[in-house]
Image 1 (cartoon, rainbow, N blue to C red):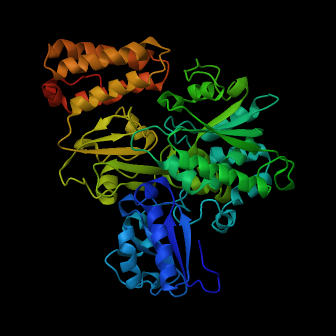
Image 2 (cartoon, rainbow, N blue to C red; image 1 turned 180 degrees about the vertical axis):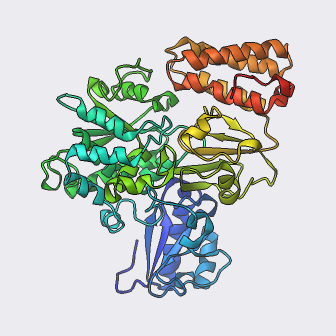
Image 3 (tube, rainbow, N blue to C red; image 1 turned 180 degrees about the horizontal axis):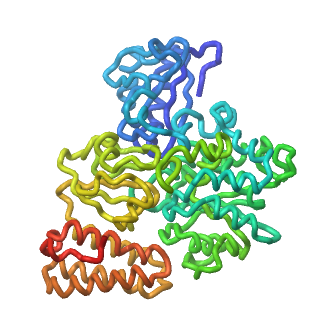
Length: 533
């Protein structure tokens, strides 16, 4: 949607990802186009992705030769509604005019300026399906470099980066690739786990809707490094916008020779397609995902063999999360050491952290590992939206532990959280104020597991149902001490005897709630389970 270039004085950027659209971005873009036309102004509208500053969406940005005070940067206005648009034009926002919604230079907004954006470097900046835009901002450099290297050297670059799976397990990505590369088979696959189902998470969606080429570039690099020639993106059914963007981006790559039978004349063949799941949380587990991708019911497979040896259709398969693969291009572009220089301990690089729940400023924060929960919640999130004190924080999705105020100074690090029976997971952080009922939250954790269990193993299938029943009895004050003992024993069985992480980790939010918030269960502080670290 644009005027002829000779008439265009200003470019207006309006996000097109589903968060912004749900808050009215399409209507805002249409209103800007109509108002510019009515006034006879040359305005070009570019639909970008969201920068992840959700409390400011729809965030409208302007840039151009006539924009005053920008110095080449973009100036922001937000959150904008269609009703605000005439007033914005009246104030001359398309030239950088002052207005109550003016935010100044977008890159200087503290929430954004204090981040280390590597994987999300293009978020909110580029047109998601413009390959020229992508290349102008560093895209395809990683794949170009990879194609000039031996596949084994590419694998070792990823090993050197220290990149670990960003989907939850935290397994070293390079080691997984090394295993697949060494496997002998007539065909190999790259499978993207895009079944992003954890509560409070959206980084995968933001990549796919806002910078799909970086994921597709990462897939191609993985294919070259491991000998895989085809890829599948297993997408959750609730992401129709991501599906449309991915398929448009795939078509662009095929047309330009970056996907297909002979990528850029290198002799390397790689292509991919999108497959949509049916809404089962369990398919976020890699072996259940593979079962579903093969057209079967999504149920856990026994391991070994590992998917890297015997995965999709019984062949060696790289199974990585969206953000894991989207982090690969910068590793190949800038080098493994560059990426590994971020972070702490065995947690290297950056993590896209998703702030949600009761916070003033919900959104995506990409930071090097080591930032504390308190910094994220208070400095970035601005504290609770309600203005009441923070009481609990759940890190890592619905199976993550609940932490109280005493643990807010923990650094976000795989090992640091594991010491307190917690996990980084997918990087989601959900904040609760002091009105939360933690016994009810614990009950919900067991209910969630009961609803989402694939049913293959007894500890998960039966234990989650019995666990919810026990918590209901405790909440009702029925024989609290005896039911508490029974609940602890049941959690122990689920944790150590379940086939996969769904059943094995469902006790973690329950045990942490019992430990840090015993009063909510009618238990004295001295009754907290001693075996919980």
